[in-house]
Image (cartoon, rainbow, N blue to C red; front, side, top):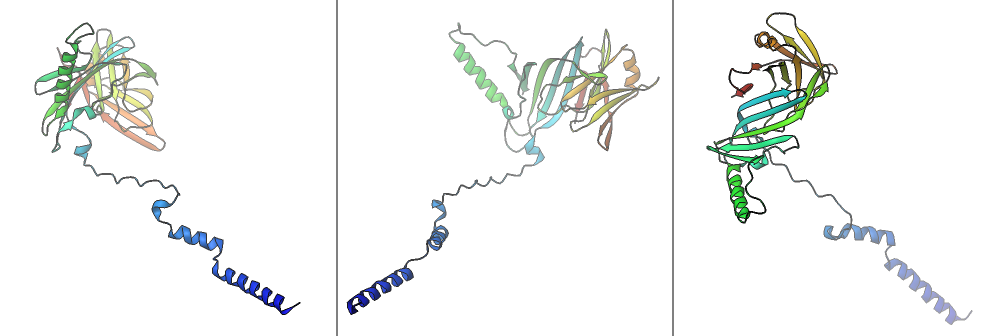
Length: 289
């Protein structure tokens, strides 16, 4: 081999060694690129952080229930229910009642609101004009303005919401049950004594947070006690115990009605407030603060 060939081969080898020293490994370069890449250009998808919830006081979570009345009448397996609730705005700002009104169901017959002496039917009210009425649009606009105005409850003011519904009694243990219409505030636990010409009914409304299998015990002022299984208790449901004679309600009004709910090893026992219909009034029970 000539000296020229040796010099050429040495130069090629030196160039290859120099190239290896100057070129970084592919893996190291990729890692360095990922590390130095700005966060805005990375392709990895991340879930945005949830906004921090704003703490609310109990007064800001719901309106204060000032007064409530419940009426119930029976015709066979049909029950007419009417709930009237008066609420007060205890907050420092105006409250939109539309955000608190219950969603109407197919069984709801009417829904109305009263404030400052003005009353307006939101459901089941009179017709304000049909397609044949040339001024129907103007009438509707006026009604919408009245609804919007009544919905705004200033601080310290009260409003009354009334809802009426008709539903069918369903078997529940050894008694019957009926789903109460949705209301602004939960209907409080109580026992209603409903006297009608064809007999009496004891309507039991358990506490809103009661769970498990329930049994109601009727303890009249005179005579033996009677226990009736209601099955598994559900929120927003009233339980109806029929009585053979309405005369038995008088003794129950002077006695006691107790509710026991058993859930696993937990037993909750409650003595319910008892109320009966006043003479000449359709109001069965009224509670107030």
